[in-house]
Image (cartoon, rainbow, N blue to C red):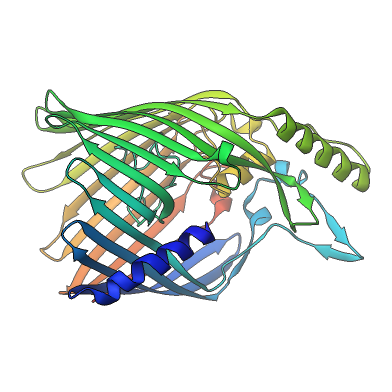
Length: 428
């Protein structure tokens, strides 16, 4: 990945320097997050500067790049174990290294400076080729995208920007409104490289896509700590997906949906390596040996949603999501289920969910809204009120709250913490 970034910088930056018209824009975003964890109030603030560059060295070439600079302040280390139900915390490993107690479940927010996107798009007569770190957005769902294996949305703020991904992309228009997309993203082992083939078009006033994907996918066994890499053991797998999505309108009501059939393939040498690490780790610790990490190798995901805007400008939206990789009973959630969810290795910990959203323009500059999330599997729920204010032409203020009402051990339990976010964004 670093080699690809270096090649892009060497090849593309001279073009950007020589270009007569370079667009420089972006935003500055200070943010404050406040949360009540058990009986304590904690806060963390961040400052994000995003600088975007775009230029066209020629009619057939487009160069774009995004640089992010983020600093964190306040509570910058979060102990994941504090948010897990008591019945699974005992599965966590107690690490003692050279006489020192180590807590590997502390998640740090560290200052970051990184190249989020850097790509070159070359437009030929019959195709477009995009090379570099670029946005890859798949699916039609608002909160959940079963066909999108590159990004995971946050339920509290599902529209927030997604990171870029290294890839080589080919887009070929076909007759009419149809087109073909192919994507290749290299990994350490070429056999595990990410591959995507997608056919998209329009039929009966609906947009359709059919796609096939191979994605390098890791599952972390957060009970096994690798002292050599100073990290948890990750099981390397191939995830194969056959998916379809659609979006359109029926009688003035927006309708969309996605379906993905997933197959997880674990090579024998990879599984044997996992067994070796598992046995060695628990042999060193002694005591009772737990069960091996369980990975469902064949499962389905699907989303169905609709939205409507009334004449008085109130917007309503509803989306249902099912993921058969997740479990239908909160008593079955184990430690690794929670960790897979926190580490974005799964999109959910609960099988069936319903999302509702309503928004209304209070004035020309102020929008108020509220979303609700309900797990039909474990009965937990959450509410996310929101208000946005375009205070000046290039300045937006956003306030987001989050309140969970579920019992401990459920997907939206109170012990996950209630609080809110206050965010400003200044565009330039």
